[in-house]
Image (cartoon, rainbow, N blue to C red; front, side, top):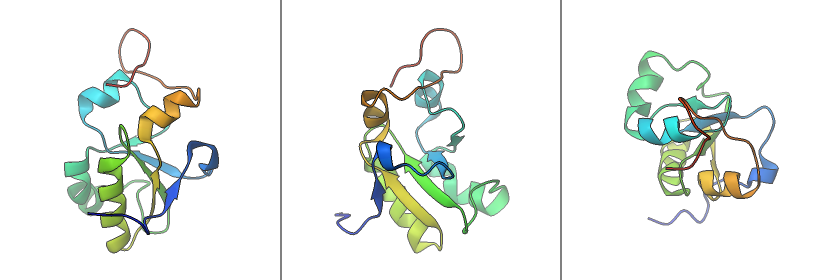
Length: 114
C-alpha cells in the first residue's frame, strides 16, 4: 500500500494544539513516549473510538505516531477514511528522538525507543 497523498507532518511542523495519538504497543509506550500523547495500541483504536473516544473526536486535529511511521500511516489512512482529521508524524518516534525532543517513560530509567 502506498500513501503518496497521506497527510504528513514533520516533528518541527507539529501543531501545538494537535492530539498526538501513539498507536504503539504497551511495552513500546512504557519505554518512552511523547508527554501528553494519548496511547491506544493500533488494534484497539476502533473499539476505543466506539466506546470511549476521549480527545479522539472527528473534529480534533489528530497526529498519529508509531516507531518509524508505518503503523501510524496505516492508522492515519483508516482514520481519514472514517471521517476523522488525522496526520501521520513523519519518521515516528525515531524522528522525535533525533530532533532532541523530550520523551518520558513509565517506570524507572531514562526513556528510550523500543
